[in-house]
Amino acid sequence: MALNPPPWRYTLTEVPRGAAGMLRLAADWRAMGELPRGRGEPVMVLPGLFNSDRANAVLRRHLRRLGYHVEGWGLGRNLGQRAIGADGERLFDRIEAMAERRGAPVALVGISLGGLMARIAAQRLPGRVARVVTISSPFAGPPDATRVWRAYQALSGARIDDPEVRALVEEAGRPLGVPTTAIWSASDGLVGGPICRGEGCDAVQVRSSHIWVQFNPDVLRAVAMALAA
Image (tube, rainbow, N blue to C red; front, side, top):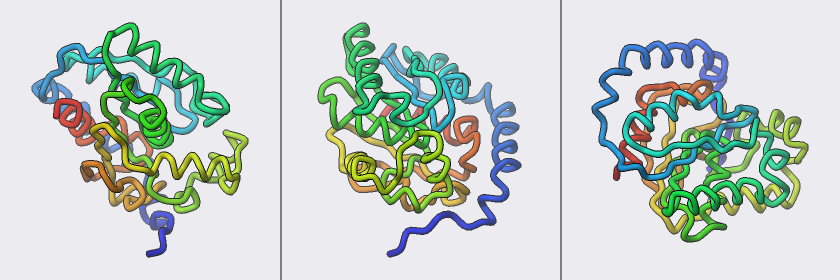
């Protein structure tokens, strides 16, 4: 089956649909405090392309309210390998340091490109990653089946046809040895739903845009349920 970018009717309505999700969050915020709670387990949230920890402040606050110890990745804007190091060493060091400080493996929650990075970290750091939750992360298909691959090339300095990039995408797509949840949307206007879920993971469908997906209350509920499973 050919994997194509999302239909333009979704791409062109990303911003208003994302804004609608944010408005719903304001209405649902109080009720989401009743979701299953954690017991101080460490969680690291990885941002999407060009985003930084600031973009995920609400998601981190949500998880802290539920009792988790939550940190951002602390690596500035996500510019691909420019941010995490040529072999991901900066990110891996951060995850290992957090696991060491907390005395427990870390749950990784990654948005879009951050989800691919989380899956690669789980492959590379056995015993340091407890579980992976991806949100609108295109780990199960080629980069050119998205509408953001040109932006990725421009920001990261890496070409999607580079053998190293292809190898990383393949690594991200392989089944993990830890519990894995893929949160995806059939109406995502930047990355198609079929490439956001794959073998060996629990797939949770939500109705959401890609832009500001981390503010969608259905997504925040799904993250909480996945971490509590």
